[in-house]
Image 1 (tube, helix red, strand yellow):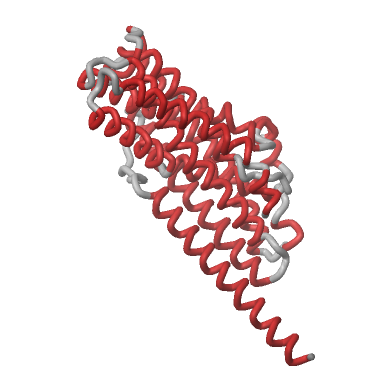
Image 2 (image 1 turned 30 degrees about the vertical axis):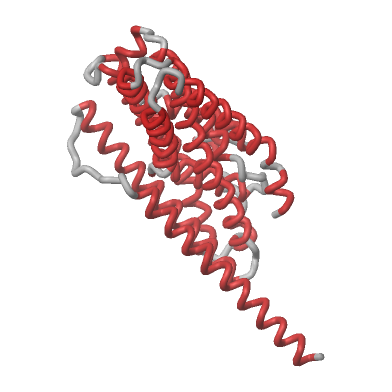
Length: 327
């Protein structure tokens, strides 16, 4: 555990550096912007980033990839960091273009019915659905192994036709930093970038078109998102590691955690398929609302962690009593 947190130091320093630059730009903007406006927009950007980290596709992608890497014995605590860094890079680049008045970027942000905006949105949605589906199916196979009491196999990555079918993607994401390009491709869906772009366009207009403030907003958005995404993968990595131990009690937790990850992934995939059908007008199915799915899933994982901590405490207490009786 200590070693896992120790390896986080470079990532913490990176996020701290981005945050410092963002805050410095806000301070610079105070020369031409009212403090209430500048700090209000800055706080809003951070909160928007944090909220976006709890979107169901983020939770499903990060948790399911973390589960697979943990099962292979690969330290997975930084999966969320690399994913959010890739995702937010699209936001930052778009924000810079919008801040400096690049015509194409502003058109993509402001014109919701443009062909380019539609194409990017459809791409991001389809790619996110595919990635979540692949890792969700892989973890479903692991869950089936757990339910069949194959303890030695439950923590390992499944082999066979499934691995062959998705081999390219599974090989591509074999360590946390490989989530960076996945995050970039998620970000090309452009909805997130458009949100922060609209905020920059509206906010800087109200604030007197401060370039420093405009540049700070995507950076602070990225920090809010990255902190929450990183915390998610670090938490899930430790929880999976604890639950994958061989004893029966831990095995039951492993089933619950893996099952919940698979269910979340399944709901995200269903919602994605339904939305793709609606966007392309190829088929119409009842809409699946996943607005709060990520928050609900996080809360359930937190409850599982509390139950796990109480279990460990009870086991240690029982052993202590037993040892005193023997003595």
